Length: 149
Image 1 (cartoon, rainbow, N blue to C red):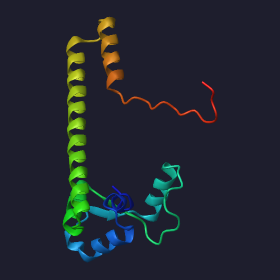
Image 2: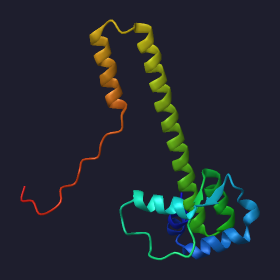
Image 3: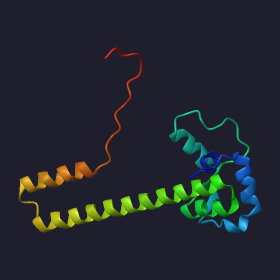
């Protein structure tokens, strides 16, 4: 997660979050947090086609790993920071469980497919249907303009 987004969640100014980091650098090794390079930041901005990056910046944002987010609760000690940190950690756990389950299911599907072989077209069509159900659904595109429907 980016420092800008975490500051918003914790209801502090980004500079306050960065100040707390600089006062506690020993708590944030490279595998907990790192600062984006100018090139990485420009690439990220080009991927997110919105103008909500807050105008001019003197420094690139910091990116936090799950452990870095957890460490923030010891640096930002407000009640809101603690509650936000709990919610973020629960989200990371749910995401990890979801990804593990999805990966296990995909692996079992491949194993089963290899056991059955490629001779039966009907079974292959069932496997294809299951893969399509496992795929992330495409978000419906929003229609632009005024519609009377």
